[in-house]
Image (cartoon, rainbow, N blue to C red; front, side):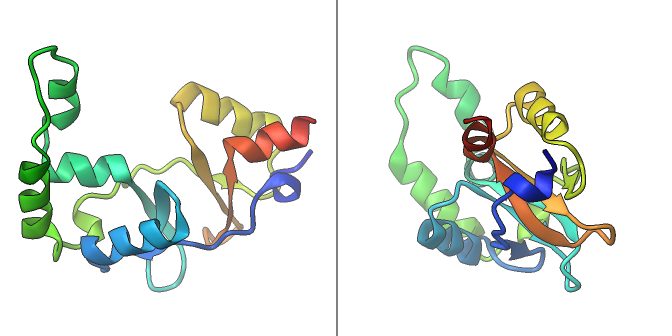
Length: 144
């Protein structure tokens, strides 16, 4: 089955020059944990997730969570988010983003998702323009 047959035609994305505050608002309102980042033409140039934003605010947060003695300080996260909310998405996005072409086979995107532990993969057309996303649930639904 082709990716275009199982993808969600969701074009929710953020421009690389948007602020982190705008990104957080978008992700909160759309209930997504990460979005493709596009340039002014709609070409996918990156990906940014909640994890990227938390890591931007508190770079060692996820490593500290693994220690038994660490107790998260939500006030520290709040203060730091306030400091960086005006920063551009481009400063924190993953630039080496994994994408799939809409004409690729579903087995290819399944392999990418499993091997790279991804929740969602942007789908692009021949010009690199965002045309949808494939989520894990899209694959599961297609298998049934």
